[in-house]
Length: 123
Image (tube, rainbow, N blue to C red; front, side, top):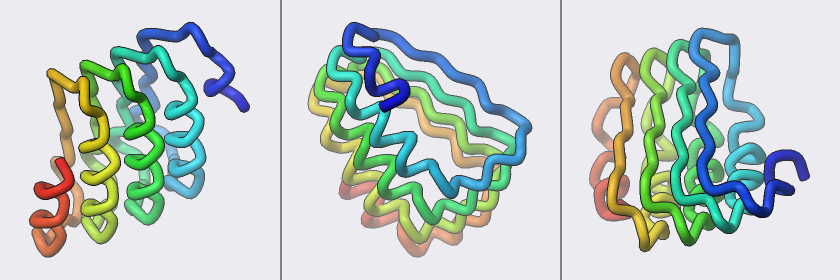
């Protein structure tokens, strides 16, 4: 459904900066992106929202289904992400075997470092 129907899409850039997104449907959004089989470049800006990270793992797993993805830029700065689901998020992103360029921005969140090990192992 939704964006996942764009079967020929190769590049996508969306800027959601400074809204009131909580992340409640972030996992579903990621799953939709994961249906874009030909996607090679993805840039998403979720900075300055209210995302807690609860659905960050499912989001990463969805993105991980983009088998052709070579460039990924994700901006989550200035949210309320604690890091609890960073491991699953990293594992999902790590499935992008063709990835040659990766930029992740988590500045200004509430990440303590407790889950950074599993995040790094996934990537």
